[in-house]
Every structure is written in structure tokens, then in C-alpha cells.
Length: 137
Image (cartoon, rainbow, N blue to C red; front, side, top):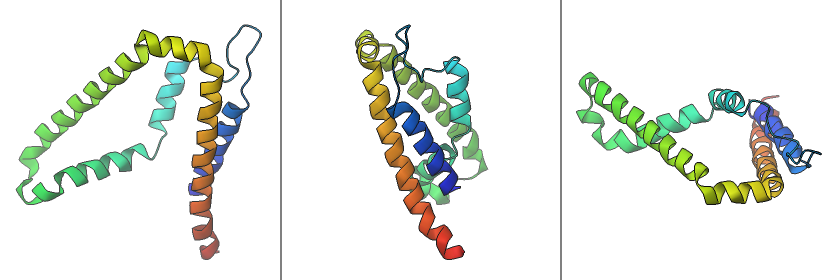
């Protein structure tokens, strides 16, 4: 899994780091249907679920003895409210005029720098997963 994820991140990174402007001014890596692509990326991101579970564990560990099934509904409600609040903050920041203008002016370089970051994450995943797999062979 680590090798596949690392290779995928490297592939995404190389595509973004080598992006170019097309004749119409758009960056070559811009998705045709960004909402659907973002949803697919979010739903297929396996790291999001363990991170969320780890955060709940870290936040609630000291209260474990006081938790029972009656706390499930309030905790689920609080998680949903937090999710919605975080989305409102993200949409507000991304939709801010100064952020939109900056991105439109520097879209190519933002994409390329993001690509280099993805390559770094991919290389890290590969170097982390590779030795463990090699020991099993």
C-alpha cells in the first residue's frame, strides 16, 4: 500500500511540477470537473480516516472511563458540527478576494510548488514502505 501510494504521489507531483500554461491561459493540470475530482480524491484518501480516529482517541483518551453509548450521539453531533464549521472556514478563506487574485496571478507556480511537495511526500512514503517490504521478501 505504501509503495502504491508513494508512486501515485510522485506521479501527481511530477505532473504538477511540470505543468505548463495552455494557449487559453489555463494550467495544463486543471481538472475538467473539479468538484467531482475533489470528492473522489477525498473519498479515496485512506489517510484521512485513521487520522480522524487518532484525533478522537487523543482528545478523548483521558475521559475513556466516563464514556459509554449514551455519549455516542453528542460526540457524533459535535463531530458533524466541527466538520461543517471547518468547511465554512476553508470555503471562506479560499473564496476571499485576495486569495483568488493571488492564485490567478501565480497559478502556475503554486501548482509547481505543490507538485514538488507531492514528490517529497511520495519519496517519503516510498522510503518508509520500501525497507519493510524488502524485509518480508
